[in-house]
Image 1 (cartoon, protein in one colour):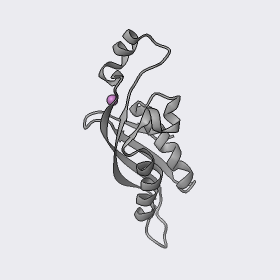
Image 2 (cartoon, rainbow, N blue to C red):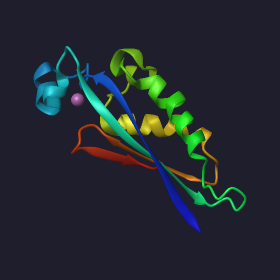
Image 3 (cartoon, rainbow, N blue to C red):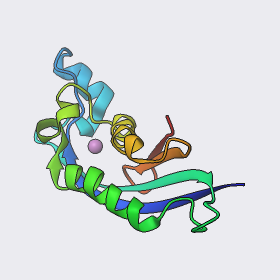
Image 4 (cartoon, rainbow, N blue to C red):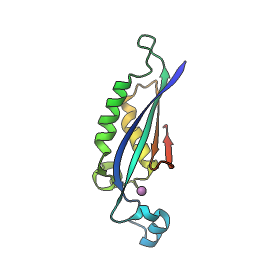
Length: 135
Ligand code: NI
């Protein structure tokens, strides 16, 4: 009997979407306001979900305190109040789109979640725009 448990979390970060190998006009055309050379911020909201069998001893799929601390250490401390392009290693060579941020979050959490459990990351860049990655 598999159950999905989820935890919401939040971070603020700045980014700029562009490709160095593209002309300014093409960057503006493709990335619009997100290509602002002075960067801009988003209030990112995420939902991290772990799916697995209920441990018959504890009644938990995963201890939520452990999940909470994991998200804080691996994601919030790593991304909150950062300029993603400049300060976060992964995005020095990767456009910090919501899609790529969700994948980076997933990759940082995956090794810390029990192998037998599934991991899903939903990342909201705005209240209306969100992406989902589950490996
Ligand atoms: Ni943006």
